[in-house]
Length: 182
Image (cartoon, rainbow, N blue to C red):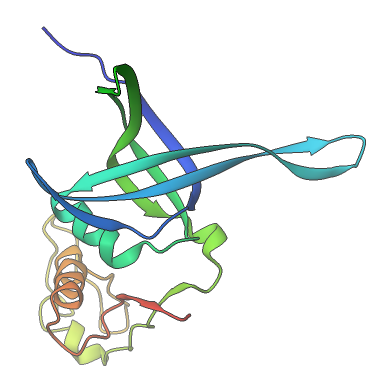
């Protein structure tokens, strides 16, 4: 028997800094997110704020670590997750607590301004590229490889390695990792 879960996408701002808590199911990180409705007011001929919605977002494991290290109060973020409601008794009354279990947390770079940028990748000399696919070799699909003056595309494995090195402190630390410019 499958269990239906209500999923939700929230576009808003982090209302609090992420906080680490240790519980019976392991370490968890939680923070509040606030989404404000924007609507066009014809009488004022301008966009105005409408209703606000706030909810606690929780995450575990790798996402918890990333949220703890990246998200800050006020950051524009996008959350995709599952709505969960817990029921508990307090002073003889039944109370409910709703939260979002995050499946995805992303920074809304359109609204982040210059809070996050990437260090530019330094250009590499052409001879570094020619080692693996030289002028007259063939590619995997049998077509001729690039000539000596052709620009080679960045390979997925190189991108993955550069990202891994940046995230794990290897290399020179200039492989496109996010840096704060506060």
